[in-house]
Length: 183
Image (cartoon, rainbow, N blue to C red; front, side, top):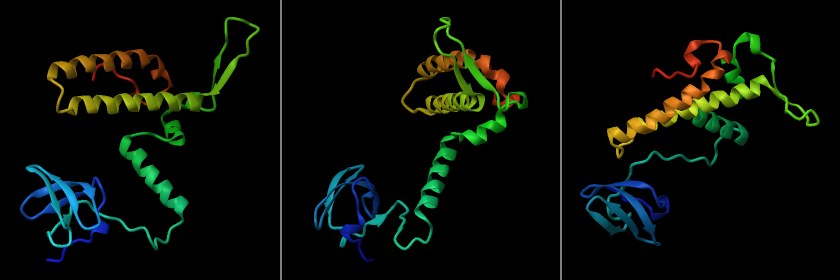
């Protein structure tokens, strides 16, 4: 089996060795890769050690797509994966009676200026907070090093945060999008 070229490796990359299993590249010289495996670190020549790439690789040279479009698609994919809505998509969750509305903040001191914010922008921030709380909740519940007691304690803070945010449930078109304290 033909080996890999040292140039195709990078620090942090996962590789597979027939005997040692999967490891992570920790260092590189002109001819040797230092790789951390479960049983310890090995210094190997990629060209003679039958290393294989574990991670899928991408080559962008010669890609026939505008860079802006490529970056926008990548960002959209990341936002979707993280569950973060874009402002124009959150407006669909906004109750119809609030469309094109404004949030107006009046200071107690009449000499100070009133602050007005488009309701869509305000609502977007609320939806982002809801989504971030949901992701935090999932990460806590799936965390391998937290005890059940620690998870429960942290979950209580999230539940109280949801409770504080229920004031804004009136803005949501559907109940499914609202802040809940019963979950």
